[in-house]
Amino acid sequence: MKQNSGRILFFLCLALSMAGCTAQPVDVVVQKKTAVEQPEALVDEKVMVAEDKVMVTEDPVVDELPTKVNLNVAFATQAPNSDWGLPYQEACEEAALIQARKYFYNEKLDKAIMDVEIKKVVEWETAHFNLYTDTALSEVKIMADEYFGLDVEISEDVSVENIKKQLARGFLVIAPTAGRELGNPNFKQPGPIYHFVVIRGYKGDNFIVNDVGTRKGEGYVYAADVLTNAIHDLAVIDGQIFRPYEEVALEDSVKQARMLTGAPRVLIVKDKGDGFKIADPDD
Figure 1 (cartoon, one colour):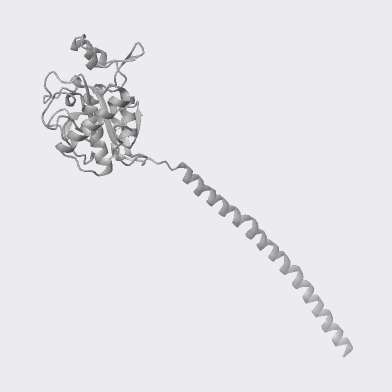
Figure 2 (tube, one colour):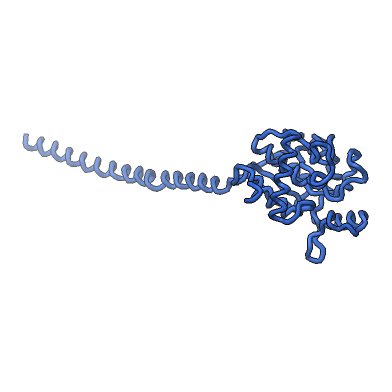
């Protein structure tokens, strides 16, 4: 009996010893996989997400341009009551910005509103720039930002592709032009020397614009190459901005030639800016 008891005790000890040698290494291997491999994967995933967020920009990304864009921008001419005297004959910049303001703020626009708004912004310009007749794009940008409360930037890229890209993002493009290069038959001939249009869309090789210089200007179509070739800001000559209206002693042909030396650039209007109401003229 003692012999049997000894044998039983021996085999029990042997079994317990073997169980202890096999179970513990398995636990260690599992713990290593849990503690090292799995957390590394989770950390990598979080870093990738964080990096993705950093790469996101405010401007919408357009991978492929739609075949047609035509933003619904309300229209009224720069001479809403068919009065082409001052200030209206020189109010294309103002009328273009008024349309952009109304579009992004979803505000009403008609002839009466355009008339009132032109007079108000002309008063503001006169107080801030001491002029309103011919404003350079840099000054138009200031108006857009400080007076109209719009988010804008000047772009030196006036290629057809870039303008289409901006429109596909839902932005408007306000373009200063050597107006006579547009060849619009609805202008009082020979047409304006310096003129602004609101580019609101495109289809194929054409741009769709609101041209405030004619009552037939709503959704007017210009060939894309004609419009982009006409885009010119006011030239800077001998350190001074060339303002055609003020150069009364110059022949129109000379003014036109000087306009063609102005840098090609446009104003991209993205959305509402920091301001949410039109400034008072005295602000």
